[in-house]
Amino acid sequence: MRPENYHPIEHPASHEYELYFGPNHPGIEGNYALKVRLTGDEIVGIKADAGYLHRGFEKIMEERLWIQNVALVPRICVPDPPPMEETYAQAVEMLAGLEVPERAQWIRVMILEMSRIAAHLFIVGGTAAPIGQYSNMFWGITDRDYILDLFEELTGARIYHMFITPGGVRRDVPNGFLDKLSHLLDYLEARLPDYDDLFFNNPVFHKRAEGIGALTQEQALDWGVTGPNLRACGLPFDVRRDDPYLIYKHLEFEIPTEKGGCILARTMVRRSEIIESIKILRQIITRMPKGSIRCALPNPLAWNIPKGDAYARTEAQKGELAFYVVSNGGTKPWRVHVRGPSTMHAVQVLEKLCLGGRVEDIALIMFSLDACPPEVDR
Image (tube, rainbow, N blue to C red; front, side, top):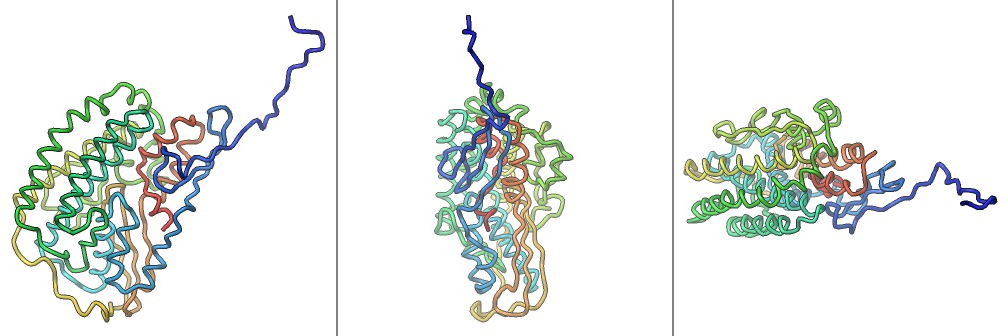
């Protein structure tokens, strides 16, 4: 029995505590942080903090020559750099009236789809890690490295290729490269059943992912969601098909979708997109035309782009990517603005999906949204 003088302690209504999730936490993407306010393990407040990169890409680009920015833009998104090169190149080509040779267009799509697979493998591994499936993470990183080996042979660099330039590409495909790519695609296709057994069909992952961090299609459209995160809500929108560029209109591929808009749906869309990218690359291997790889350019150190503005957009691995570039007729861009998917996914959407959830779901939700912190702090 309780003593007569017993008085229970009344906790104040504000019995909350704050947790700094990142930037060195393994469950966070890159140099990023979340200021989380909790009651027990329930999230009652959350604020994204992207102040750990301070790259300022857009303003740096306005101080560099048109051609110099080819070396800068890949760094806006480390896991998937080629779409940055492609989108910037498209904007410059619109302003300068350049026509990219057909062979160069095929090579560009090859680079973009190789990078899409590599980035999907990377993020699928990242999604597995927060639930303790480190083997899948190691598999994803290792198999991604095989793609980076081919990038190194083609471009001389594993990550920042600086390969897609205004007017074309920097060099041609080496002898035997397409055969090596074909063998790698055979390997990746043979590996997918292993990924299914270990991760995609794992009941532990399904229990932790199904229905968690869910978006409705209406919310996705209102919040500016694009890419696999939008397609996981059942809407088959993809810039490659709906506003085609390069030679995508000549290729056969499907736009995978899922229902539910949750962690599981977003992850399964990425699995399906790996298969579709393999399908695209096989068409490129068999149909690559001969011809020039770039058009003639003036002296890049004194290249005056005509006055005007251009808006170019592509379908990056993480979603719709766009560059708005303004020229005042000089040797440098006058204004540059990058519209990337991660700004929405890693800030507005992440905060909304985490609020009211549990602390152990933060990492899974963030990895399932597949954001790129440097692009947020551009």
